[in-house]
Length: 325
Image 1 (tube, rainbow, N blue to C red):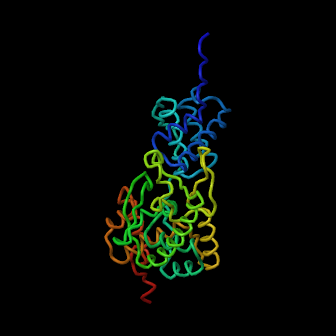
Image 2: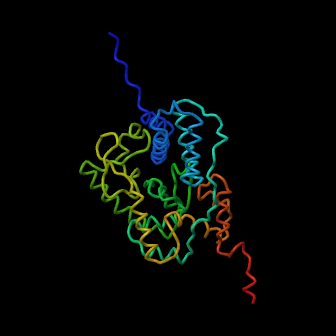
Image 3: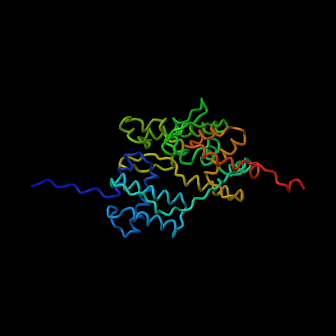
């Protein structure tokens, strides 16, 4: 009797394996999974091996023409489908010249003035306030701030090491003097709570990639702990013991939304607006754009150039003739 043949892995399981192999983030996996499911539903749940360039083109055209999605949204959908065909199914799609691209719009970022930043920060408290101060004072993205571990903070050199930022790149940015005292107190409280948890046999934290096998005891070491841990201990994705995760972004987002509304700014400011304000205010203070590019972690300086259009000097730095009347 021949041995039983193992069933072929399901499509989404293969997708998860391909993404894990390339160390893509959980957010990328979630986005790709969502777009692939939407693509399959659009074509009546037919297997993607039965579909090809024409079907991908019709789906992307539908997104642009019927759903009127933004150019960035359509590009994300295209990236998910290309990954599915090339990395999961091992197929290569023909060059899709007939794809109707959603029109790209150049949108200026929402930037707060220094007084507006102060107004919003005064309406925040506790951990949320400290995180927002880092977004503004260090130019961090929200997920970069939440993903900080104790070892990433260098108080002596006044710097923060951002690991696995956008594009899976590491970079160094500043640790503001104005944040140090509050951040030290926050860490001291966190270390005391962590030591109590370890004495109870808890205190394990999620670790990146295969570090749990490489450093078996690292999961309970203080240096590997989240700077901003979640208030509840979550389950382990592998079915093991509960582990600490970092604070969920929605906690900070809700606090910022409420503070902006209470401040009555008249701007649709979000957590990311503090990163925009960080860059704009550095340029206002005379720092060169290459320095700002490095601190933000932009791949190309052209991305950083957008902040030159929102400097507090009026449109194009031109004085209106009405001001001379």
